[in-house]
Length: 387
Image 1: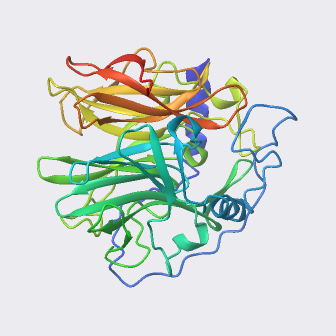
Image 2: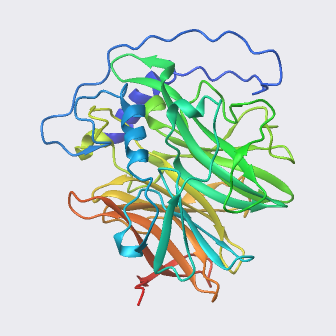
């Protein structure tokens, strides 16, 4: 039944998205973009229904204002224990030069710690003045990577005042892109360096989020999510970047897998999950992070939704390269309404998995777990309790 339903939806999705094969070359003279008008969306969530995003009336037009208010509430610098933090999509960069752990997340601010126990922040470390990103304000799923002599900040910005598509009876699709900022200092400020200001690293007509950086054989790739809200069965895709990371050199993104390939991935309406207050059918991809085990096995952490709500998925490349094929594990790495996790190694050499978790109807809070990567596959250990 699911396969038949999926085939039906995918046939409809093929009519929804323009997926031409032109190079994503924005160095040429920009063309006038057609203005997309908002239209009828998916049915509203039932009163009291499980709902990701918190907007029960289905109104995303005020999202930027809500996010701005959230950011203003975060302006007070303080030092707090790890258990007091509340955030989505935690990402830790352990900087060997300063022996400091830097924590970013959705919201875009940064905390820092010497011991993983006490965290100082949140600091604003980015400068996006004059870019379209400024209208969005809120950077989702922010990450920090060191490549060569620079630190790179990858965040996703969403401008709901700029629609790229109106999918009838489904969603007003906003301009969503993962953009790169750069700094010589791990603590910023991170500023734009792209080939043109506000450059779209992914195809503009795609709804793209959660980009992460990965290097293989001297090349740098961005792995990112093509949102299920636009295409129904979300995908994980990659593009190759130029040597200086200023632009994309791929002719077109390569699809690695679809959400529905994971046996534990549930269809959102079938799970009773609403999104931004809307009943949208589909299968979700979220939050990629690449890793290699000590035996050299290439894997990816990613997230989706299932019987226990949000979950941490995991898959491995049969070829040992980004090209795959990518094979999904038969069971989640971690379920229990936890996901969008990543791996980092402490300065003492311990491999840690950090993830956000929701208890009942509470806030998203980060957790840390021990992980064994000595074999071909990751093995989840015990909660990493800070004493």
